[in-house]
Length: 416
Ligand code: SF4
Image (cartoon, rainbow, N blue to C red; front, top):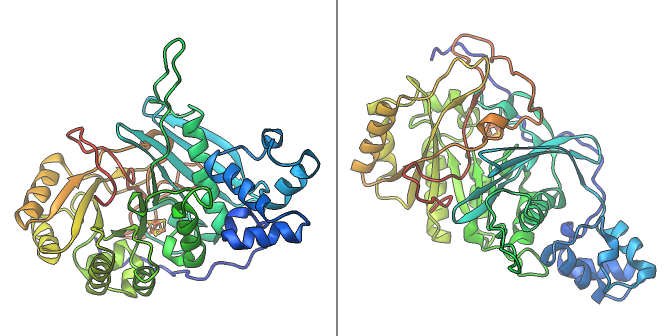
């Protein structure tokens, strides 16, 4: 890479936009009860609505299925507390039906995407936390379009609840059809990764609100284990430190992609604000506080960050820490000047990291054909993206699947 690429402007503050309508998932259990009382109903109706939304996964469009609510007030309660936040514009599947990418439109026309993936031992949804992104990573399709706006807590939660309903209803491949007289077993949504569009920690309040809704015990929330939820970040250090104090021991994934500041300044522009050493120090402190192993994400780019000396440098930085490296084979998009590392270089990189005692796996890919991989989500699946101009300014690349099976076929859980 040369050093003449155009500097990237980081955008931390989201443009002011009208707020989405209030939704039950924006509120704590106590706030829901207060809202129902304000609407003239008894407080326990809030618990009934929560049970429908989080536990039974009732589609709010199917108001008549909520037979425990009085027929006369059912529609009004649902309209007030379960308004439509996301409309599915399209859904595309690949990997023999095991991967499904949904393009959503919000109430104000913003677009975002989520990707649902079935693995042998789990079903994972990758959600967006912002419409667009202000971090400007040159390898990322999302980053090229800039930040449209932050998503609300409920807009994030709704991606997860809809995914859970999709799995439950057998609309994701890989479920087991029961035989005659036997129930079907489509499994259930088990994992959530915040690796879709946006930098989650740049939308801190809404994301932590969503984390609480996802991990609150059912029926107040979805009742997912914090261990099965992964939040990725490019390294917003103050927010990592704040997250460690929330009592939400979710897995932290740091998108590192380079072992030194000179290269990382180029690949992940926010590095100019918080350099590698500071990011890793915050990550290790996060691991200390939560007891959770930090996942280090590293896209393998041929001739850019995959040299043996870079593996050595990374190995030295990570040795002895509660960390796991996910090497991510690059998946170029049209116009990209970057390519994936060769299998031989990849193997050598893994070997060197492991020689430092660093647990390392290589991700398989998911969703490539439908532009559903991490870094590929741009809410416009059919558009061919131009290369980023400027010498050394590569075109967007694709960082494949947020969570995947290992190449040897065994299951990998994000951050485990
Ligand atoms: S890689 Fe992540 S943080 Fe960087 S521009 Fe893309 S979505 Fe934003």
